[in-house]
Length: 174
Image (cartoon, rainbow, N blue to C red; front, side):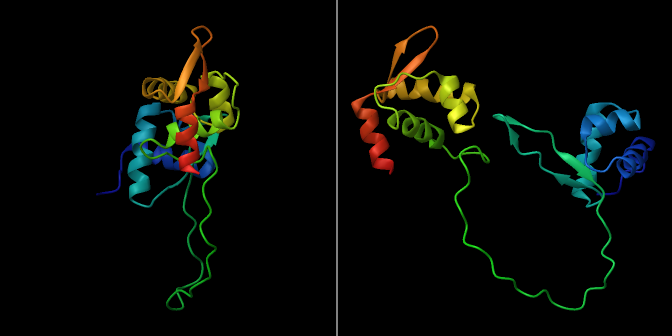
């Protein structure tokens, strides 16, 4: 893929040189181009290795904006093959880190409710505990209610409690 040589791409690279660590909307404003154009150009430039994306992670259950920088040139020549460095064993990610696999959120929701037997919790309360989206938690609770693992105790505001079947499922996962 050829490097974009458009005026918009050059303006974006110039803005990035002046504003390292800025988000795509900030760079778009600094370059005087549209947000959509900036996002597309940044993705293309990242694929080419001309810019670096620093994932924004999650803040308060929401995805934070990615930050962008220019790569720094390596001042030392490559002396030879890389030296292997010892690595730490992988640790499980924290509750709110990264995407989950199929059914994993439901298991987290069951675990949260199992830790609080007899308590009826709202999707928002569970989402805050798990650092996940309240909408995704609400969807998981609907599925779990359909499976009989949880019971909706009140319609507004919605509250759910784990059932004996749900407690058995939560115990099985541990």
